[in-house]
Structure formats: structure tokens, C-alpha cells
Amino acid sequence: MATLDFLGATGTVTGSKFLVETGAGRLLVDCGLYQGLKALRQRNWERLPVDPASIDWVMLTHGHIDHTGYLPRLVKDGFRGRVCATRATADLLKILLPDSGHLQEEEAAYHNKRGTTKHKPALPLYTAEEGLAAAEAVKGVDYRAPLALAPGLRVTFRRAGHILGSATVTVEIQGRRLVFSGDLGRYGAPILPDPMPIEEADDVVVESTYGDRRHDPAPIPSQLERVIKDAVDRKGAVIVPAFAIGRTQELMYHLAGLEKAGRIPRLPVYMDSPMAISATEIYCAHPEDFEGDMRGMVMNRNCPLQCGDFRLARTPEESRAINDVHGPVLIISASGMATGGRVLHHLKQRLPDPHTTVLLVGYQAVGTRGRRLQNGEETLRIFGEDIRVRARVETIHGLSAHADADGLLRWLGTAGRPPERVFVVHGDPEPAAALAARIRKDLGWPVRVPEYRDRVTLDGRGST
Ligand SMILES: [Zn+2]
Picture 1 (spheres, helix red, strand yellow):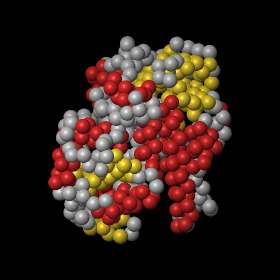
Picture 2 (cartoon, rainbow, N blue to C red):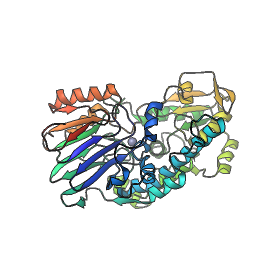
Picture 3 (cartoon, helix red, strand yellow):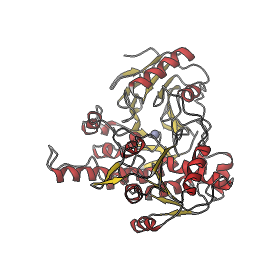
Picture 4 (cartoon, protein in one colour):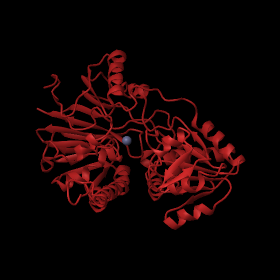
């Protein structure tokens, strides 16, 4: 009899890990790192409730660290099985996992320097080198091509539209189908096509990040056009703190479109982030992730994510050279909430200039510099200095990589017949409960919000 254990992303949006135990072996769907609250991050250091050496396969839904960042640690703790993901995810992991290892090393070094550690010396969860080794062992697979892991056990990846390479994962155990949504993208979003239909499912595990929300329908290009035109009139720079994967490419796509339509003047755009540059190259190397015009452009090596005067800053010298650029210019740089990264140098230099615009394009968590700017604070502390904020601060809403409640319901509705059970995961308690209530009310399906370490049997006869 097969079982499903919830080992992460219960009551929270990080640490995704779902263990499927079958007669043929043990399969882990996603292998995510806990992020955010300290009580959760502490779990990254506890031993996994299952011996990593006893796991046979790991299937990764997409590249984000909260779904993949525990993999190097799993390997370090004895896992020797096979890891599969889509081809684009496998490529993205070669930049994401070493970067995650690098951050772990920096954190350990910080604690050692400050003496803020019980363990002497503090060690990283894993190193950049271990991150890269884990990523290089990931096997890339095709969409909609069932992968036979053992007799009676098959896995199929279908596009999820969340970020490049993102997929839903269907696990078939003796013909019974268990479908994981992973993180689900938005319907009708630019760049990536809509999520593929579920087809058939007996059990569904669905995310609920925005399970209680409806996204703002105001069109992004019009919002962007207004901010850019205004900045050009004032002959100043536009600084955009943006996440390297997903948000940066979506922004580039909209800019290129506005330029082509003549809605904004052609102005120099700097992408100042080595990770964003590599990620954009990976976007343009995977036509299988696109449909229609986008696919055609990518196949013809005509990257749809580049505007007319597009400049890359890979090295620190190239990044510093941007300081001498005056007049209207757009600088896209990480991190997305201005908590670190190269964007801090640009903010430090240009915030005191009233011609500057800071454009925020994503969620800004409480306590971050991004949120402080949004709140209209008059000074901002950067590299130990209080920097005066004379720049204009603008926010564009609606650039989210996650489906809202309507989108999640729409995807569930693509199941060919009602599933026997739905499990709502990957959400804070309120959005998870709200989505569960809607599934019950609108679809009339049995639904449950599992807790950490809950186990259910997969024979259709309820839970243990
Ligand atoms: Zn994600």
C-alpha cells in the first residue's frame, strides 16, 4: 500500500517536500529549503524524518530554492538515488544551487566573525561546490513524456507556467494518479504559456500561496509606460530592484513590447546581475517551454526578452561603469527587495538625486529596504550610511508568478473527473484555509489542509 507524507510546505510557503512510499521504492517530490522565520529555518538543520540513503528518486517541480535548495544537503546526508526535473529546470539549477551554497557559506562566515554561534566553527548547510555537484547530477526530462521509474511506477511532468521549466508532477502508482501542482503560474501571462491541464487525478496536492486573493487586472504595460515616460521627462535614471529569475525577464519582455509599439522612447537598459543574465540566456535556450510567437522567436535565436539598446553588466567593473551614465537610463539589478546585491550600490549613488525613480515590481516584505522606500521613509541605511531619499518611488502591481484563487480553481477544473481528495499545501494558514473552503463550496470535492508530518494512505480509503 502506498503512502504520502507531508514533510514541508505545510502552514507555510517554503520547505516543499512530499514523500511517496510505494512497494517499488521511495520517491520525494520537491526537496525545498525552509526560508523566512527562524523556527522554520531551524528545520533545515534537523535530520529528515526519513533516512536520505533510503530514498530512491527525487522529482523537482521547478528551480526555486524553496523547492530544491535542500537537495545538496540530502546528498551530503547519504542520498544516492536519481534526480529528475525538466531540461530548463536542470539548467537553472546549475546557477541556483551553487548560489544558494554561496549564501550558506557567507552566513556561516558571518556567524563565525560575530561569534554568534553555538557551534564552533559554524558550518554551512552546504557549500557552493556541493550545490553545483548536486545540480550537475539532475537529469533533464521532457514534458508529457511518462518516465518509468519501476514496474507500476511512472512520473509525468506537465508545464505549470510559473517560471521557466516549472512543471506539475503526476505520479502513477499501479494506475492510481497523484498530481502535485508545484507552484502554479497565471493564466494569460506573457512569456510562458498557460498551465497544462491535469487530465486525470485520484489525489491532488495543490499550492495555495494566493489562495485568498484575486490579482489586480490593471494592465502592466500601461503602468510601466506611465512610469518610464515620466522618468524620461525628468531626464533621470530608473532603478528596478528585481529577482533575477522570472521577474527580470517579464519586465524585459514588457519593455521590448512598449519600445516596439513606440509607446516609450528607446533608452539604454542595463541588466546588472550575473544571475539574471545567465537566467535570461537559459530562457532563450529552451524553446520547448514556449508556444506560438514566443516559441518561434526563441527557435530563430531572436530573443524576445531584449529591447533595442540592451546592455549587460556581468563583471563588477561593468557594474561600476554604470555610475557614470547620466540622463534617462533603466537599471535592472538584484535583489528584488533591496536586501542585498548590486542594486544597493545604485541606490546609494542615486537616491539623493530628485531626478531618479525607484520602481518596485514585486512584493516587498516588512523590514526590507524596498518596503521602507514604499513607506516613503526619508533616509535609508545602506552600507552603514544613512542615505537621503529624494528619488521618486513607484510600485507596479500585478507582476506575480503565482496563480490567484480563481487561477488555482481553474487548473483544478481541468481534471477529467473529480478527484477523490485534494490536499492544500504551500500557503500561510489563512490562504490555505480560504482555498480549501472554495474547493469545497465551488467544486464540492473532499479537501483537507494537512499538517507537518501528516501521513495519508493512497488506496482511496481515507487517511491514517
Ligand atoms: Zn516557485
